[in-house]
Amino acid sequence: MIFILPIAAVVLGFLIALWFKPKVNAAIKLLLAFSGAFLLSITIFEFLPELYASGSKHVGLFIMAGLLFQILLEFLSRGAEHGHLHVDADSSKLPWLLFLSLAVHSVLEGFPLYKNADLVLGISIHKIPIAIIISSFLLASKINTYKTLLFLIVFALMTPLGSYVSTFEFWTIEVTNYINAAVVGVLLHVSTTILFESSKNHQFNATKFGVILLGIALAYLL
Image (cartoon, rainbow, N blue to C red; front, side, top):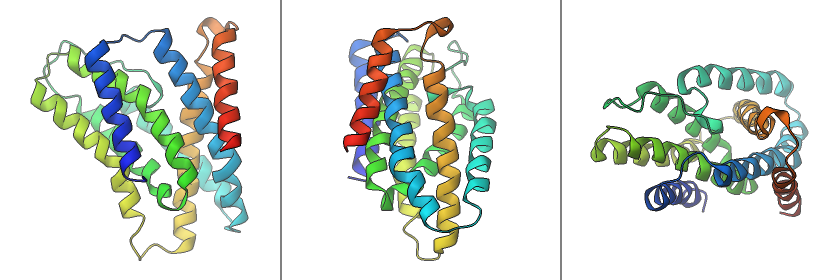
């Protein structure tokens, strides 16, 4: 499941984009809000306490390093990790900076999944709306079908690749904890950005608030 669910999430997102050809509409924003709340809650309820319980001295420092690193990645992806995509749709060239940023982000988020099964569901749910948005852009662009499918296949495989790399025996417990702490920083930035941007002009939206509460409640119950 650790390897299958993240891939299935990207495939599902692609199929939704292919069949329904959605734009960035209310339904996708609601799904983003739910995924952000669920991912943030899983991180806080499960992942973060385990890291601090490990006794590693510099967990907080690496969390902040991961958060700052994600900010740098977003200069390349222009916010694709949390549902924003600002690239030239009229170009026939693959957006390599977007690809590089998403690949690095996906490998990182896959690293802790091998020993944190609860996080797998959060990451997978988060990938669905992101895959919808990326797939919609690629399908609507002038990029040919072969390049589009190659982009999505590699994107889908990056998170399982991170999980696989984490199984290598040369990782010490201390190094693993620090990498996981950096991943927490990445997830905190992405999930909170989704939530902060979930309401247009910072107006209260009862539906989105209810979806956010649902995400939190499900994460707590699981």
